[in-house]
Length: 252
Image (cartoon, rainbow, N blue to C red):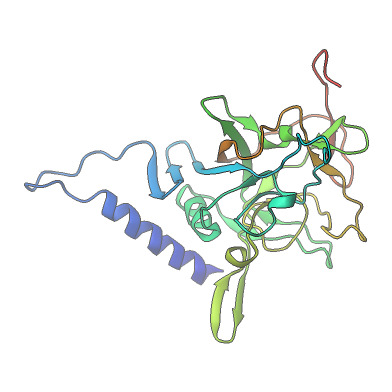
């Protein structure tokens, strides 16, 4: 993983160097903006420790014929797992990995269900922004199917996916699987949910669904914001990291 991190940092450095080149006439380069675009749809703010990328809502939880959209991950790449994700983005997973390195996040490793080993890495907070609204905790877009009164309680870590070598070709695993921010444990996610849970229904019964009371319509533009540090929540915890939801007056 260290070799991959070095390659990604070199790529990121090259991008940033091009953006900070000296201006014509030999004048000194202008002070870099607080937000730096490092790839189409991908930005970082090193002062605030934030990575932000563009996406769209992938789940159609407002269709009365299929109101329960079960979730196995929160963010995925196109043509992978959109049917079980909240958001889809065209930003390459390995570039998101590089952006997290640039803000000082330290990768660990994905969870391993066979060894009951939880994921590791720098603690992260994941938020979503719709249009010009405020950033909200992505966990607020998720609820449990049985009671509609629980939300994910555990936080997220920079697990950093894995490196696979096949036929003398080395590949960043998430670039192939499309798993960017997990909710269940795939073992290839860039950002992992701390609680272990199998994506196989025969092993762990599916629990999480997209909350139609807060998730926008399918196709709505979204910004996903990843911050260094963990946003704590209060409540009771179970194996899958539940906490109780206090709904506003009038909510069902």
